[in-house]
Amino acid sequence: MAKKTILIVGPTPPPMGGIATYVEDLLKSDLNKKYDVVHLNTARSLPIKKSLVKSFLLFSKNVFKLLCSLLRNRPKIVHIHTSSYLAFWEKSVFFVISKLLFSKVVLHIHGAEFDLFYNNSSPSGKYLIRKILNIADVVIVLSKSWNIFFSEILDDNKIAVIPNGVYSSKFISKKITLNKHEHIVQVLFLGNLVERKGVNDILSIVPIVINKFQNVNFLFAGSEEVSGDILKLKNECIRMGIERFVTFISDFNNDDKIRLLHEADIYLLPSYAEGLPISLLEAMAAGLPVISTHVGGIPEVVEDEVNGFLIAPGDCIGLANRIIELVKNSELREIISQNNKEKVRTKYDWKIVANNIFNVYDELLEYQNNS
Image 1 (cartoon, one colour):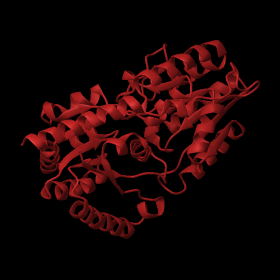
Image 2 (tube, rainbow, N blue to C red; image 1 turned 180 degrees about the vertical axis):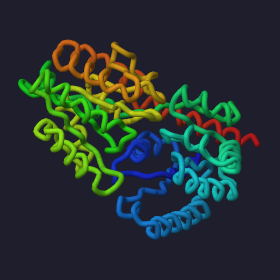
Image 3 (cartoon, rainbow, N blue to C red; image 1 turned 180 degrees about the horizontal axis):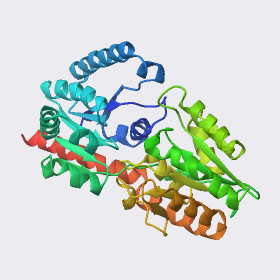
């Protein structure tokens, strides 16, 4: 039997990012064994993001590529990865074109602030958002908490809850040791260096932590969304007198990322809004104890005091206290490390996630054959 064609619409690295990582991992899964896969890469570099003209030209080029792919490959399903705000409206154009050319469409919502995007939209904007979501054949959301939100604006029967995943074996360290650093405890933040992720909160508590322990280094690994943001953060460190305890890395590849995770002892993600961050799952797969917040799907992954710690967004004192607790207790770090590796392996490995996505595809294809 001939394999059905699936068109995946979404970015892959570079640049690094949650959606790009997800789409790249999906394309590396067993997808090609079951289906004929076509990919439309919508990645946008920082120089293009900073230019309205370049962004429009790239968008127009991608629309043309989409039309060509739909007419040439005749995919049975178009799987569109989107988030919120402008990205949602851009991908909505791809959505409409795909529906007009008779493909089934899966909308995969990755946005951490989709609720704010919807609630802050005008009445006509809200109507259009609801209309697009309800015309989609399936809407994939990342967590049970997001399912609750989307069920208020969308037919429940169209929602599929599928969490993000990681290839857990890729993050297993070959060095098994209780203390990776004899003298320095490495505290890692991995993600876009933006205020929503709690970057400023982390900087604010560095003096509290180093007042207790001098053997701690805070490593921020991620890209800036606005040119000059990293320089501002570095200048803030100088102003606070903490620059020798803080390191910034913005240029790294996937292998570098894995190495950074293996070299770290504690992972921080004190976000104010999230879907289900892949970086968190990667840190857990690498065996890092995590400190994060009660937002999005994070509480469904991190059980407080079992495989990490959860604080309220903006609770800087709580953040500092939890870091101090982990810095001084290497045995606790090791216990949480084992819990995290086991949880990701059994619940969030890509083999499990991919099968859930394939089930969505197969149900749509079966419906097509019967209609």
